[in-house]
Length: 315
Image (spheres, rainbow, N blue to C red):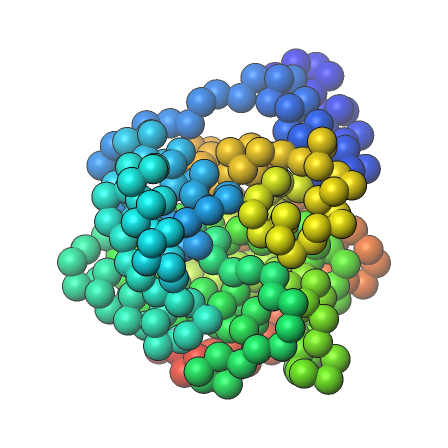
């Protein structure tokens, strides 16, 4: 690493635009001399939300590194197309806003596999209006918080067998939100799609810390990360004004997926547990005062999610 890399990284991180944009990753990659992703031959990787954008880029990167890649998606045509494009070995059709689909995926996957090296939670979109899932939960919260809990819990024995890694794809948008378990799931009267998405992303980061704290003795490491500002179909559809203004500075999906690949493949990534990452470095989970939850809030959220899903891991 060059002598200037660390101060440049800190300067970029101090400016949201500089850190999250294409400029941030391109400067860090050059100054820090990043190595290519390590060989993944013989390892099994599951990627949810893998039919476009960052999820598809991550799946393709793992496949290129030699991994046995499993894609999970909700649209059969897009799932088949993505699998052919990235060279995935298996696909599972599941709408993860439906907890029954999440449970069925776990059951089906566990029936034919005895280990899992990397689980990437990427599924989840920014939805513009209030929608209820078959179980009566708000769609954003169900797909990005509850379903992840169900899947991680169900696949934990397979992850433990491989001393595997769980990687949660969050968002820098979570920095703007303070977490309160009783209001993390927005109702129809106060629903705002951007806020619901940011709250779910804040919850993901907090729950990742809880997984790491509660299950450190399993040998599994838990990471959350954010990909920066990337040019994906989801951003173009859900945030058209943002996309129009920032378009020239947005990262490619592959650049957004880089830290996912590094966390999944590199030995250095298991030196810590429960951290929040951007561009191969751990980052603070708080940019605004009072937004990072305390231990009591994190515990309350964990207990709420366990109760809502009917799944209490380790019991």
